Amino acid sequence: MRELYASSNGDRWDLLIDASTGHTFVRHTANQPSGGNVVDMALPIFLSLDSGGPEHQALWALIRSLVT
Image (cartoon, rainbow, N blue to C red):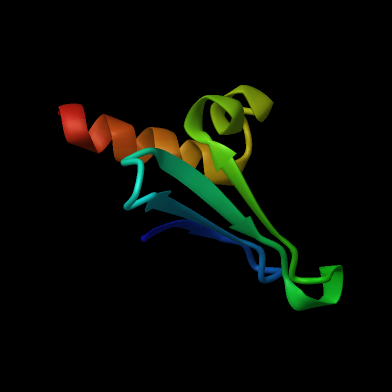
């Protein structure tokens, strides 16, 4: 698991790999006042949602760091 972004309100986005399938996905964990819900999203779905958010920018920065 690798942290992508943690917001000032306590929300967190992590990049994970499913050991059984090898698929990579993003896990969003909401802050406790919002219920602490956890949502797993496949990378294409995550990236299609809104590329302007700081959590999306963090993933794009990670991807850029791998190819530069």
